[in-house]
Image 1 (cartoon, rainbow, N blue to C red):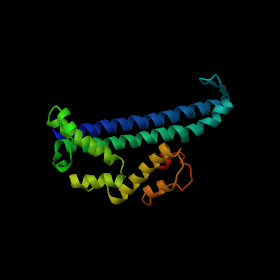
Image 2: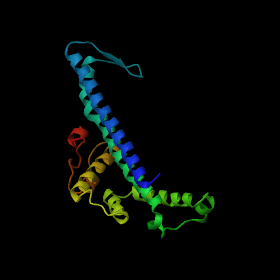
Image 3: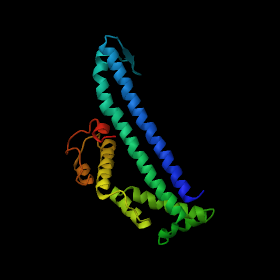
Image 4: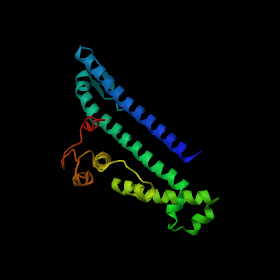
Length: 209
């Protein structure tokens, strides 16, 4: 399959996944709102969890908004960012496997060469190692790397700063229990939406997703 077709296929796959994730969030919020409305109309509701604890409508009413702005928003936002990262690194992989010349200075172990079935597997191994190292760097480094591969006119510097803040927010949700810290502020490149010590709440709406 030609490279351009592979990239278009990747774009379509990720775009569809983003739509599905967004719909999941919107529909889930809608269902919580329906439940809240029924409780406000006087309906009785009870839910038993796996430990046998039962909560009634009074508790559920209070939990609904917490779940919407907390767990639901957080998990969906993290999925958005994961899909973005998938697109970026799958694009890198497609490009580097098609044009491996930029990797010609990379070293190989004899073990990799001997275990590979053909040249394609050798290239694939080098590409995977290269991208594993890149993944731990900052987003600005990702697009700096892209600049070395192709001439790009996007994202702009401001867009890159905003994307960096999104990635920093995701890192806070995953690694710091959703509480902004100095690392978040630093990684946000002047676009921080939260102060050091502030909890990231209702994160999807705050980012205008």
